[in-house]
Each structure stands twice: as structure tokens, then as C-alpha cells.
Length: 167
Image 1 (cartoon, helix red, strand yellow):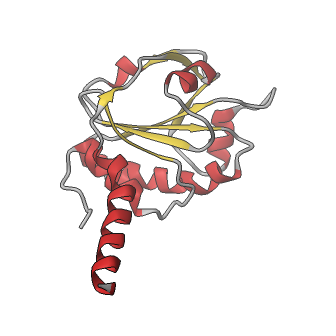
Image 2 (tube, helix red, strand yellow; image 1 turned 90 degrees about the vertical axis):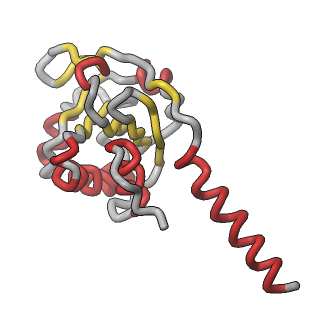
């Protein structure tokens, strides 16, 4: 009886943890925001490409810790044309978000003043990272702050259509 209970408990916990990864995909809400150069950038600019959409703020220590893991996805999924794009929101006055990322040694671009887009995506806090496939469907979301979290690769696999590394 104890073995059965342990097995059922383990199965239930596994299902609860993995369920968000396999939820029905929904279309990513469209947006148009400005980049650091004042140019308009829209979700439509990335049509046909898998996209990692990272909602962040410069004052968020958890964003700082996960961002190297997002940067690593750029190289790891280069053959899949994966794009990592930041959306800065709830930012302090006078901060230059793209310069903040560059100062951290990060190469991905960020869009600014993304508060309305964060609301459209249902973002409640930082960091929040969405994984969107080439068809424009959200295939996963995470609030991890761990750059080594295997969930980043699992979700990138789903976004790019690679065979997932979930066992």
C-alpha cells in the first residue's frame, strides 16, 4: 500500500509540474513597441520564427540571474532561427534598458515601455518568459530565475519543434 501511495503521489506531482508545458497553445497577443533607437517593432516582425519573449526590468535581481540562460539559447538554437527578445516594463525613470543588457554582456535586444504588452500577456511579475512557436502560438511560459533550469531548454525545444528533452 505504501508503494502504491508513493507512486500515485509521485505521478500526481509530475503531472502538476508538467501540465503547463503541454497545455493547448494559444495565439500570442500582437504588440508594437519601440526599441532603444526609437524604431517600432511588432510581433509580426518575427512571423515564421520561434520566439522567446522575456518580460523584465533592470531593478529585478531574478531577471539578472536568468538572462545568461536566455542568452545561451541564442547560440544553442541558432540553427532553428530562435529569437530572444526582451520586453522591458515597470522600469525606473531614466534607465536605458538596452544599455543595461549590454553592460551585462548580453546581446539580445529589448523593447521598452512594455507595460501594456505585459498586461495583454497576463504578466504579473518579473521575470516572466514566454515561448512562442513559428506559427505564433504560445507553447509555454516560465517564471524561473535559474539560468540553468532545464525548463528553458524544454520550452525552447517546444517552440522550435525539436524533440523535447523531457524524459
